[in-house]
Image (cartoon, rainbow, N blue to C red; front, side, top):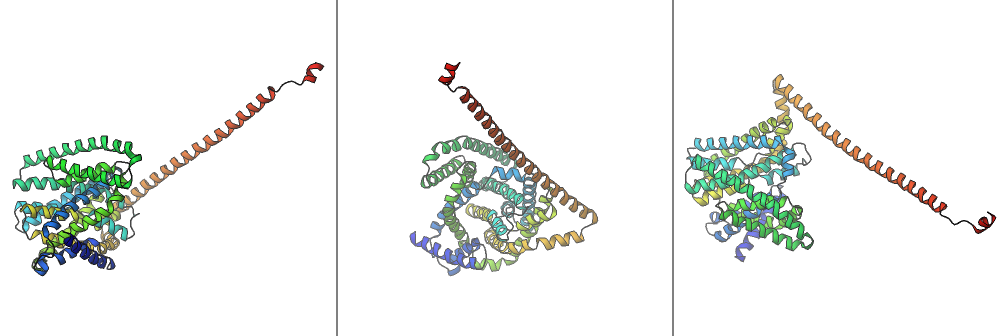
Length: 458
């Protein structure tokens, strides 16, 4: 086991370092490292696949736990309509498109359903990293994009649960599915409410005694406890890890736990992506390259179209809507997890897994370059748009600009009001202090004893 871990870590470290030098996401490096140590490249096992798969399963739990920790209800509420409409448009649009692609490729219902689920989720990690590296972290569209990614993560976890149920029964029954969704919603609500009522209060009570070591052990214990609870309730372990992350995200210790979990998450996430790479047969990439290219084009075009439309319908400007759509042109960790689930349960075609992983690698590699094309494409669209559409684009720009001015103006007014209140309070305090001092001084003068000479004279 130690030998396997050594081979994994040293290979992943060297390859990811090379990808860093090439300014590519390290996730791609981990997948390539998996191909290098996997059984398909050299024809024999360098490491034990069973050990790697076990570590990879733990890695999935930690990755989802940390994604849950990054979930903030405040961020979701701030995104508002853009997040709801944008996420709904992307998810529904890509599900329909993905299912249609599966049926076009003569896949059965089960394979088409799993393929649709794999294609409808952008990678939160890759999108935020690409935005940061492009220097767009403070851009106006980022808030809406973050809200959409949060909702996509929630839907992805729900899809994992539903797909597991469908795959086990090997059938797609509408009534049964609705019952499962109802049970899932009720269970999530109960877990979340109970968690919010109990865990934050408990952490506040014991906060003076929580050093970093105790906090990380407690957080991991709560995570694994929720994982076991989810499994006992008949749901996936991934759901339990994600829910506990969401619960802890609403506590005072959220950022501290997130910081402490980062090294552990990075290690096991690396092992997970290496295990993904180990399942790829390089010869299959050559065999299926037309399908890989076709699926990649479907992902890129679909995400741009549905992302742009969703954000535009949600109230963003056309430029911001296109910026979001052009940054979502890849699939990532949840696609791998769903693909691995289908392979593990034996309900998907063996060819789907390498196609999805290769398409993810290709679209991830192209993401920064596609993002750079946002402005030229926007200019081209505006120039060749009808006069009616140009008027709508200009009107939306003015509407959003006025809304921002109103928000900033109200914020400034609020700040000025607070400042004036503080000043008045200080002036009132100083005046009161002066009056009190005068009063005490007069009292002390009146209370002085009368001179004896004056008394005799009197």
